[in-house]
Length: 260
Ligand code: NAD
Image (cartoon, rainbow, N blue to C red):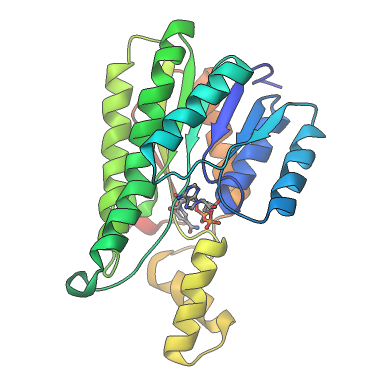
């Protein structure tokens, strides 16, 4: 219960990695604010499951592409919970296309949700963290924050941006009890990746299973997916006292993807 009494926001926590991170934070005793889109009943169930771990939870459906909704979310958590101690910037979307065909509105949406949202959450949460001289900011970047792939101009630009933003925030808070780090997962089989697997199976006229293996073979030398629990475990470690001198780092959990 290392985070007992702390308050956490996990953006995009109605699914995939964010959901796993939210559960892991609750298991450490943190009160957790859930954010993201989804079915009302399923979100209620997520909240109930979290509360059964003996912590408080709330759901705030702020759209991470809207700066005013992001600022209002942080204000609401400060008012209702007393502060934001742990901030996990996780909300993200993907869009693939050659750059010459990339719709400008898709570029804007990917940059807004995958990069600018972290700027907005961090700038709103930092004053409170400074006042309490403690904070943990974990940005869920990607292997694509460190290396590129074709057809992912917006995603790769956004995730490289997240790694850069992480370093700046770490430097600006270096003499405080606030740390800011990034986690860079390879392929994790969440709805975001399942969509790419399904598209690949369709495009190549193969089975979904074959498309999964092809996806892994291309990038991830271990040949296995990273699990959401493994990303959550790294996030929890970065929230610990043992990690207090880890600042501005980008941790790969990618089956060897960026070692190549
Ligand atoms: P996911 O699709 O399962 O979850 C994405 C979450 O973001 C959902 O809760 C969704 O509702 C939320 N979201 C999307 N747009 C939003 C918006 N405008 N406002 C608020 N919430 C919004 O995807 P995931 O794979 O769990 O991805 C989570 C993060 O991990 C993303 O930033 C993604 O880029 C990153 N990541 C994923 C992988 C992978 O292989 N799955 C690898 C590296 C990095």
